[in-house]
Structures are given as structure tokens and as C-alpha cells.
Length: 285
Image (cartoon, rainbow, N blue to C red; front, side, top):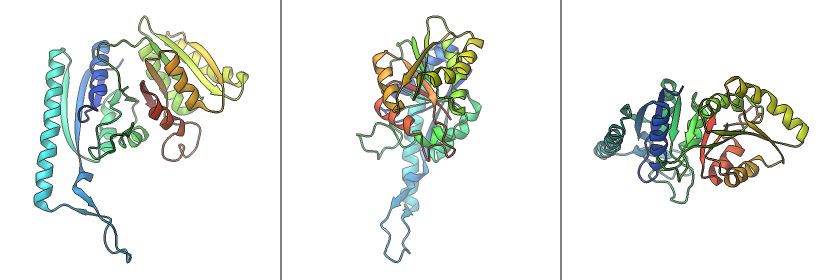
């Protein structure tokens, strides 16, 4: 059971998807919602171009007066977002608490995630200096990489009144995708939910073998999935196409594949899916 949800509040309008999903999930599961807004300490550094001799630092801090003014402004904006969120929870009879923290956002949120069952974040809205054309905030990758709890990256078009009917679980046999089965079983156990278990592999035979233990795990939790094997060498393309063509409401998958170095910094398949898929995606590291 999802008893507690940690939602990282982003600046409007980017934060709308995460708030809508947190409201929806809290009402469905009867969960408590803890909202956090982070004052990013990197905002207090000014980029500098170093001198050829290398003695000039790449960043320098603001003056004390500038830093205090900026700190006050950022704290006020965080408090405003949190107060508004608390009012919205109260109007929906959702149990809620709020918190402002100062630090590096991904680190602060991943540390706080230990106390909760799931983290909900928006795709954008955490970095005020980001390019408006960016589809995924720079916060998302390090948060997924460091969080011990599943991270839901909310879809851009998710509305609070929407329903989750069709869940797609992308399973490749890795430890990360195996851990993701627990949240899949939790969410798919409700009546009226259809769950499809898919794997993307070079051959049909190996696909059925990979899916067997995942199917057994879900069955032990009262969930009977539809199995689907896709023969391809491009999992990101296949999964994104399935999400779009099969009216998938929620995609659940491991954040990384089998690579021992966790696909360097961020799973290549995961990164492509987040960049090209507008659905809600739960990722488990």
C-alpha cells in the first residue's frame, strides 16, 4: 500500500503534472502527501570564464547582500508554492505536510525519499534558467539515479480527473526492472486495471523466458498480465510507440538495463523514452 507520497513542487506551469498526479494517487490510495520545495544553492554561484593560467575559479559566489536578497526571494517563492499546495490538499480532504529545504535539489529529494513510498516529480520547472525547449529538467536524472524509492515522472497532460486503466510494464530481466514489479503489482491490483508485461529482445523464445519470472511475481500478487514480446534492437522506439498506440496511461520500468556501470550516467533507453513519451513514467533504480 502506498501510505506516503513525496511530491517535489516545481515552479508553475511545470509543476502542474506532478501536483495532479499526487492528488489523484492520494485519493485512490488514501495516502498522506508530503510536499517539498528546495532552495537550490547552485543559484548562489555566478559562472566565470577562467583565465589561461587557471587561477580564476569557474564559479564565484554572490556578495553577501546579493546572496541574502536572493535567499529571501527564493524562500518566499517556495513558501508560496507550499501554502497553495496545502490549501489545495485541504479542499480535497487529503492529508498533507510541507517542507522547505536548502541544498542541491536532487540530493535533498533523494534523501527525503527514504521516508516515503514513492516520489512524484514534474518533467520541468525546477531549473528557472533552463531552456524553454527542454523536455526533461536536469533534476530528473540524478534524482532517479540516487532515489531508493520509485520515481514517477508525471506526464505533461495528466489531469486530476483522469483514470489509470492501462499500465505497461517494460521488463528486461535486470535487477532494476525486477524491483519495479512491486509498484506495478500495487497499482494494478485495483479492479478495472489492465496490465501488459512487455520485453524487447532479439528473439521471441528468449523473450518468453525473460517474462516468466515477472509473470509469476505478478500472479502471486493477484495480477494477471497480458504478455507481449517485441523483437527489436531498439527498445526505446518500441516502448514509446506502444505507449502512444495502445493508449497507455502509465509506463513502469527499471531506470537502467544490465550494464554494470548503470549505463554510464543515465540509462540510454530511459532517457530517450522520457524525452519522447508524454505519458506518466515510474522508474525504479
